Length: 171
Image (tube, rainbow, N blue to C red; front, top):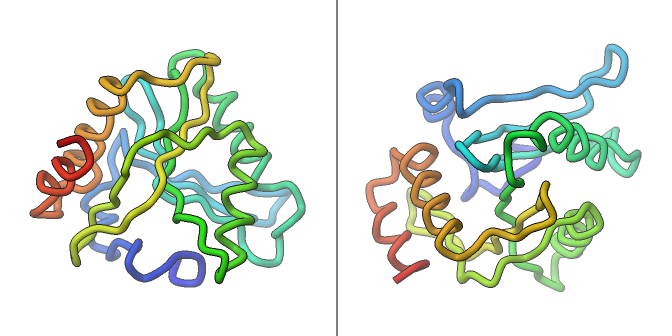
């Protein structure tokens, strides 16, 4: 993960051990015997949330990211309304941010009109919250608020100031 994500977005090994459960889990994706990437998911009653998704460098630009998102949709579309994900804000000085946003948009993700913040040990990071609908409907603001509250309590339970971050987002 250190090779795929900014330090400010990483959790410690112990944090992962503490969080992994029935509703916070890791899926590995293979092409034959080759591990091509992984996704860490939080599974809520109505939605899934991609906490981390990564394709290993040697498998970039070969369609694996799209296959993973399609597989997740196929797995969860019958009992979930869609998939949330946090994405770094576009920065023209870092072309990968543009490429990443375009990838998600090309796979049906819609940027939600929310001043989203990712809580971390140092405070919070401004990010964009995206949603991939599985039933053609975007969630209402009230549903997003309930989801994010649950996400913060289950995934960011170890961040002492998570409530302050939540209040900065939703007032």
